[in-house]
Structures are given as C-alpha cells and as structure tokens.
Length: 279
Image 1 (tube, rainbow, N blue to C red):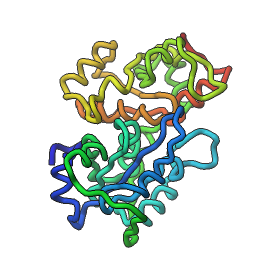
Image 2 (spheres, helix red, strand yellow):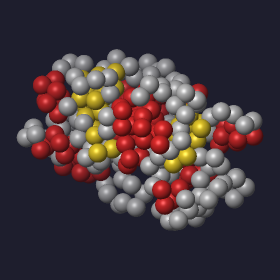
Image 3 (cartoon, rainbow, N blue to C red):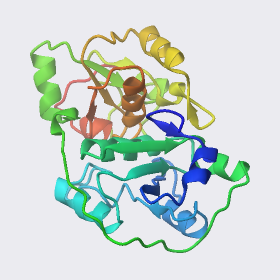
Image 4 (spheres, rainbow, N blue to C red):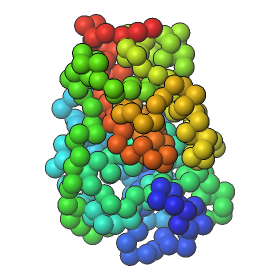
C-alpha cells in the first residue's frame, strides 16, 4: 500500500479479493459534460467494483447538485452495497480525479475508517494490463455505523458568520482562474460571476498530474504561492462542492486535516443576488 491516501494498480490487483477490500467507481460528469458514467461502469469496471452515484446518494430535496446526503440516506445506501465503516474502501473514477476525492470526503465525513484512492484511476489500471468486467455487481448487505462530523461541512450561514465576524477562516476556491476572476461565465446558467469576498484561488487541476496528486512538497508550495496560511483555518469551495474536495484531500496530505468544505459552493452563492461577492 502506497500510503494512507492512495493505492497503486499493482497493490489493488494483488489485494482485489481480500475479504476486507471494497472497490467503488465514483465517476461523475463535469457540468459541461453529458456522460452517463453509470452506464460506462456497467460496460467496463474493475472486477467487483460497484458504482457509487454521487448524484443519487445525495440530498435530493434541493435543486443543488450532489449535495451531501442526510446521514441515514448515506448509511442505508452503503450498507446495501455491503460496506461497513471498517472495510478498506478503494475509490476510483474514470477521469482525472475530478470526482474520486468527493467520494473520499463523503465517506470520511460519515466515519469510514479506511479509505484510499486508486492512483491513475481506471485508465492506469487498464494500462497496467489488469482485467475488467461488465454487468451489475451485488454484495451481501453490511451495517455501516456512522460517525458524522458536520462541523467540516460549511453552509451559507457559516460563511456569512465568518465574513461578518472577521474570522481567521480562509476561503479557497478550486475553480479555474478565469471563472474565479469573473473573466469566464459559469457553466451552470443563471449564476453570477466572481468569488467569495477575500477568497484565494487554487484551481483543483494545479494539484493533479495525469490522474495522480503531485508530491506533498509541491502541493504545499502551490497553496503558499497563492497566499494561503497553512497554520490558519481553511474552507474550500468550487462550482458545486465537487472539486473543493480535491483541495481538502490535498490539504489533508500536507497536514491540514481540519479543512471545511462549502457543500453548495458557487451553485448556491452565485445564484443569490443578496450575497456579497468580489470580482
């Protein structure tokens, strides 16, 4: 095993049928894509891998995309998938780590104890010559015992309180620089352009290289170069709460393990004309 965050395709191939290992495909489309990743999973996946649909194991009572589900919704979904809090959950996606960190964050928020991401995702698995299969995957149900940490989930209310109290919380936005600086429109229609007052910009793609995270030294340098104080509280955001998790994982890797995530992100903030923004 590579470390507490990742496994290599070789390691997974050697341990794929270990009793405590569960593999999930957590692929999700970018807002500009209309890719049915569940169908692609059905056609080709790592043997035994189940599909974890971030848009369905979610709060469906809101029109905001892939919001964190209620704890009971998550517990029921993963228990039905045969996952307990003690399983070693290996997460991959079919892209460039766009969505696997969001699944990592979701499992972590609800108390999963052992979570890893497959480096290079499905692409590197296939390039290494390891097998895939097609069709549904069913496991015997297990019981997932929750240990929810809601304090790491930021809401609009928490952000407004931080802004009004001059709190030391630093807002870091994972969107592309052009969107952050209001030079390019948002992919979701009807949203204002700009960013949270005082926010700093660390595009999620800056931390990733060919489907893997850069080294901890490089990641720390990237945050510092954008003026982030790694000794102060941090909250991440993005377009919809997806790639903000890429930053949370990167921060966790460099020792900043208490970063919060604004779940609704710009999909909520950018839609409300009454909320302050900067351009």
